[in-house]
Amino acid sequence: MLLLDRFDREYRLDGTVIRIPYMSAMTRLVSHDGTESSFAEIAETADTSSDRQQLFTRAAPLFDLDPESAASAVRKVLVVTARWREYARRSGIAEAEITAMEPAFDHEAAAQATSWLSSTG
Image (cartoon, rainbow, N blue to C red; front, top):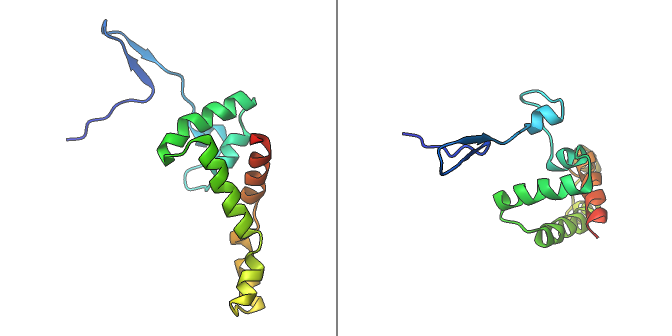
């Protein structure tokens, strides 16, 4: 048996059901099944900073994060990954392998994370 609590419905004590408007991230990003997207891309589609804050507030509990710890975690990741080439070379990784690893570190989501961090103050 599978029991679900619908996130898009509010069940009132008087028996009425209120539908809460909902748009999936896939719809918001005009994306397709199987297409990878990041949380930062979803946040970038928000119309206002208030919408971004609400998006984060709703999603953060899923990751057990509050805005302050999320910003701290993102900052730590950005600081360490900013020097990934240096760490790779020190570890004896060949230049060809470093080049092959670039897409894992140098991508739009990293720029979006930096931008998000700047907007959080």
